[in-house]
Amino acid sequence: MNRVTGILVLLVAAAIISACGATGEDALAAMSGSEKQFLEQKVSKIHKDMTSADVQQILGEPYRGHGTLRPNWLGPEGGDRSQIAVYFMNGKAFKVRWMHLGKFVWDRNL
Image 1 (cartoon, one colour):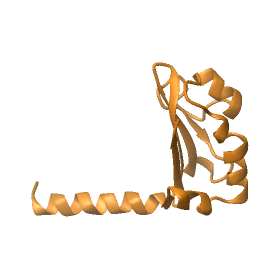
Image 2: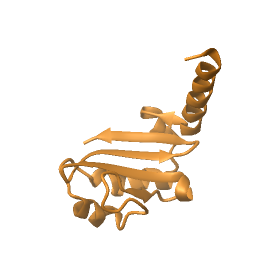
Image 3: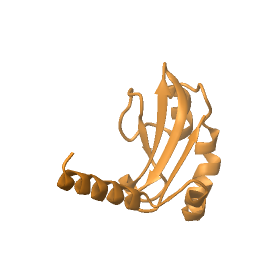
Image 4: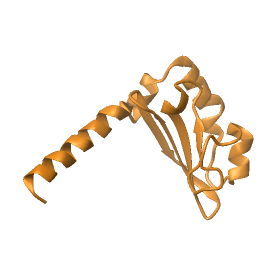
């Protein structure tokens, strides 16, 4: 990798990290009241080994990616800048990641 490519890679990585905002425990602090309520009442009910149909009972129809290994649902605010992805393997849920661009990334291995 030449010097220019290396610098470009670092700049892109920095832009992605800054676009994500808070992560880990800081993500909870960055959430609004309605986002915390949605997390508590909906997202926290998703458990390991749930099927896509089980998750849809909780979150409704996916915004995009229906029938894929990582369908996405919209969060309660922020439009398409706030999306919840549920990761599936062998038809069973194993991870949830909620990304609100510029604000937070919250994820949990199930």
